[in-house]
Length: 149
Image 1: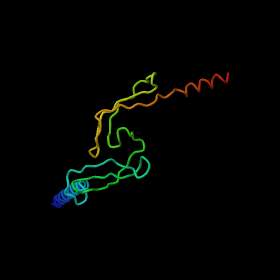
Image 2: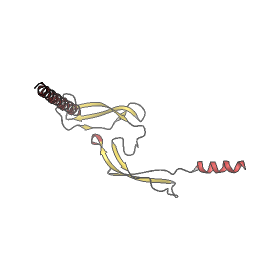
Image 3: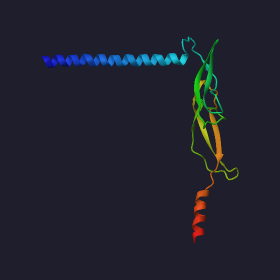
Image 4: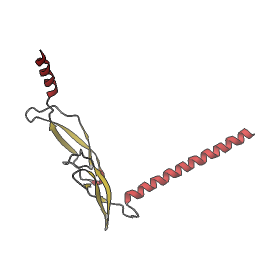
């Protein structure tokens, strides 16, 4: 009889623990929703501007948002390797780099919009280029080998 009572106590404690965890999770989700709308805000449709770095052209900065007559500034960060042509708030999925174009000395790839953060105005597809990398290391090693003979 004592074993059965212990099992019942364990079951009740386990149920209480699971209920407590579910409640804590629900409270955390509610806090996240409050943060997105702004502190003490009843506004739903916030319009956010671009992230403007505090110094230079990358790093920590601020983003200003408006909703009706309300305005807010939140901290944000612009990565230092971002491409200025399409902005730090437009996230793209890129294909592999294409072959080197001998005429221009560049190679290209295309990106498709994956996510536009803070209602940013982003192009659906973009094309980026970069210079072809010359294979100087292989040539330099070949010259060194010939010089030793």
